Image (cartoon, rainbow over all chains, first blue to last red):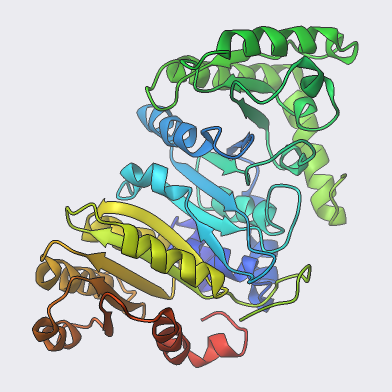
Length: 270
Length: 148
């Protein structure tokens, strides 16, 4: 199939068109997805999640730059909500990343949730596979701004970055079930704001409380200011160090295997 | 375009890019149109101010949009609007429909239309005119719910 060759060659128009087909549940999408199966599983998939306005898009913008400095090709899937009333959507995440619009090695795609709950769209997972097949080294998935229970991003990502900001609640909020359980790296953004240090202490305190965490790798808590570009380089180092450790310990293979099995069965665990 | 609450949206959505080329920062009009089109059921990608024709065209390709709405209030529309249209054609996506708005003297509209800008909506245009334009310029395949 011609479009498959183009996707594998990294042709931007073909990739963009294929994503639309996947999103629209087109008949050809099935053929494309089964055709690219063998080519996927190479990219580092980063999930970026957190409350609305916590700075996910601004952080994605900075992380793109860090990845480009390592000469890695980057794709971003930026999910925003569809209106339950009109079905329309205002997709405004890429506004923060437009600096990279003309970089041929950066591909940014805005995606409406189209009625899917859980922080991503129904077709986000298949879009990751298309971008992986197209040769992007890193794929960043930015979720809809989430609250407590939207954890589906964990099923698609190698590493989940949970972006938190000061002023959104005390340690009890952080002990609750939900998004606090899926973070592999905790990012305290807007570190210049009052309460940022305290938030970091609270997150670390809560992470140390969990008995489950003893069997799990210690999860880093990193303070940044995406806007002022402070701490982002350190965060980027942490991401790659975490990825390497996951590869060494076998956790990465385990996660990807689980993801693959879920894809085969066509289900999500939550 | 309207759908029932809670239904799974599976049909092809019309995607529209709203962008501001040039150097002026007056984005109220662009934001108004972007929001109104969202309320009309379209998926609107908003890039913000100070975009170059190249960044607009590359964004349109990556986002696989059907329409681009350009807003400009600084007077550079005679240069920048045609540059976007030409660059789309050179990039093999000349089928994307371009419309414009902002402060555009009516005497410039025939020139812009000749250069491939398919409609110009000035201040005070009812949003229903824009919606009507979109509905009459979407390709027949999209009407059947199939992507192009």
